[in-house]
Amino acid sequence: MQLNILYVEDNPDDHFILEHSLKKHLAVDFKLTVSKTGKEGIENIKKENFDIIILDYKLPDMTGLEILRELRRQRYQKPIIFVTSKGNEEIAVEAMKLGVKDYIVKDNIPTKRLSESINEILLESALPKNIDIDTAKEIYRVLSENSTIRVDVVGTPQVIPNVQIPLSALFSTLDKMSEKGLLKKEPTHSIIACPACNSLVISINVKCPDCGSRLIKSGEAIEHFTCGYIGFESEFEKGNFSLLCPKCTKELKMVGVDYRKISNCYKCVYGHLFNIPAIVVICKKCNKEFSFDQAVLEPIYEYQLSENGKKTFKLSILASEIKNF
Ligand SMILES: [Zn+2]
Ligand SMILES: [Zn+2]
Ligand SMILES: [Zn+2]
Image (cartoon, rainbow, N blue to C red; front, top):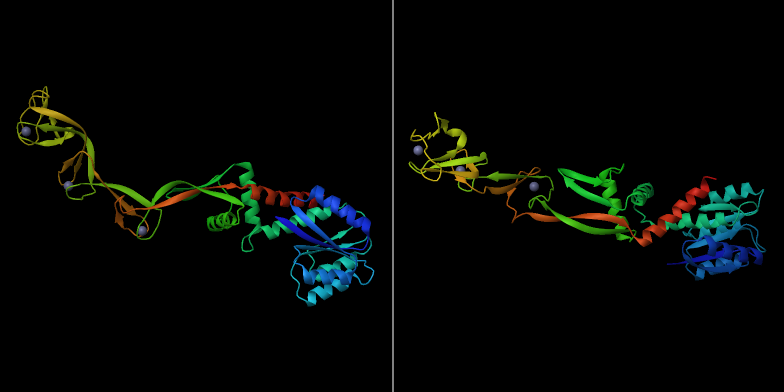
């Protein structure tokens, strides 16, 4: 990215100082065009598409305010930073009324201040127009402390680490920032979503493969070879020395001879026995039942700052530090 800056100022010393200061403090590459008169400045603005205009108040042919009024008539939209000398605060107030982004008093504030002002404007222009800058800054803060933001789904979507932003605002901002290349968005794993309504809030249930009943018990079962009865161990009453079959009431003699034990057995309420229950997924939102085969797989994403994002946000940090002086 190369920033195209126009500086309207007649003093060559100021050109020199500004150019050096920008080289030192500006986080991006830039091209600086200088106009030495107001008329030349307005001409240049007509001809070329500048990202930022830096406008000095005192010019040989007209004042900065006159230029501002002219640009306003032309409905000029690009950010303008106004520079006045000390003691001209009323002029600065007038310039703010005319819509300048910032004004700088050049006598007592180092030119570093100007770079910071440009950085702040850059951040604003780098962030998508429709996103909330404070949300974006909060995301940056969290991402600089933790390397990633992960969206996880445990019943309801959760963000790890916990971010103090309403989820809908957070998700839309994360996505808009990814689209702009400020964040890297990587799918980390897939989760099951309802094929009917796409809800991620689901429950996984077991059912009898024979009758579909969802009332199932599991346990250790016994098969009595003598009568063919299969039931849970708990159904067999204890005799003096062994177990009694609940069907034929006979005593079980010896494991492997007249009965066997079946571990991890399932039994439905209608008496069907099975080793592996059928799995049914139920959407908690629309109540649709579906199998894993029918489920929609939704990717879950992790967000990280991209190099571009790091660079962009550094601008705002620098700018806010300066403002706190
Ligand atoms: Zn059954
Ligand atoms: Zn029996
Ligand atoms: Zn559903």
